[in-house]
Length: 296
Image (tube, rainbow, N blue to C red; front, top):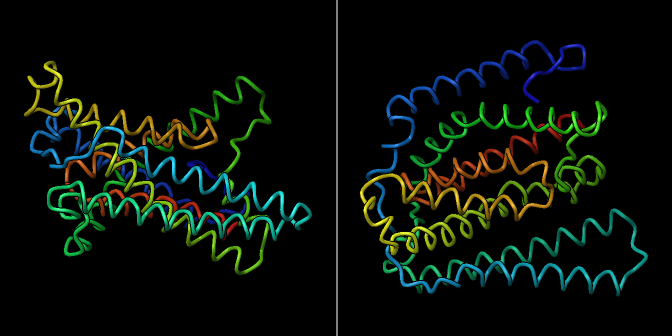
C-alpha cells in the first residue's frame, strides 16, 4: 500500500523510498501532461503496424491457452483427487508453465506469418532492449501514483460496501508464495509471474489484440478523419486494456490493472516495440513478488 505505518514493521528508509518513488512519479506524470497537452498529442506520430491478420486471429492463442489449462487441470483433478495442497500447487504451476510456453510459441509463429516484416513489425527487436528497459522503468514510475491512488480508492469503496474488515485478496500466485515455503514452488511461481506471464500477456493483448483493434478502427469513416491524431491509438489502447483487465479473475484488481494496462498500451503505441510493455509488466509483477517474499 502507499501509506505504510512504521510501527507495523516498515522501516523509516522504506517509507522514505516509497514516498520518493510516488512523488517522482507525480513529477514525471505532470511533465508528460504538459508536454503532450494532456495526452492529446502524445501519439500523433505513432504508426499502424502493417499486417494481414484476420480479425479473429488474436482469439486463437487465447482459446488455446484456456483449453490447455482447463483441460489439463481437470485431468489432473480426476486422476489424482487426493493430492496434498503443495503438490496440487506445484502441478498447477507446471501446467501453467507448459501451457504458457506453448501459447507464446504459437503467437510468435503467427506474428512471423501475418506481420509483413515478421517479428520486426510485431515489435520484437533485440537491439532495442537497453533503451526499452530504461523507458519502461520511467513509464512505470510515471503511472505508479495513479495505480496507487486507484488502488486506495478501490479499498475505500470496498470498505464502504462491506465494512472496515474488507481487504482486497492478493493474486493467487502471491498467495501461494506466502502459503508454501518450498523452494521449487517459489522458484516456479516467480519465473512464471515475473517473466512468462508478462511476455505472454503482452504478446497477446498488446501485440495481437491492440494491433487488430487499431486496424479495425481505422476502417471506420469517423476514425479516418483522425488518422493523424491520437484518437485512434488511444481508443485501441483503452479497448485492449478492457480485454486485458476482464481476463483477470479478481474484479477488485480491475481498476488498478486497467491503469497499468493503459500505460503498457501507450508504451507499445509510442515506441512500436513490444519489449517496452513487456518490461513495464515484468517490473510491476517483480515489485509485487519481492514485496511478498520479503514479508513472508
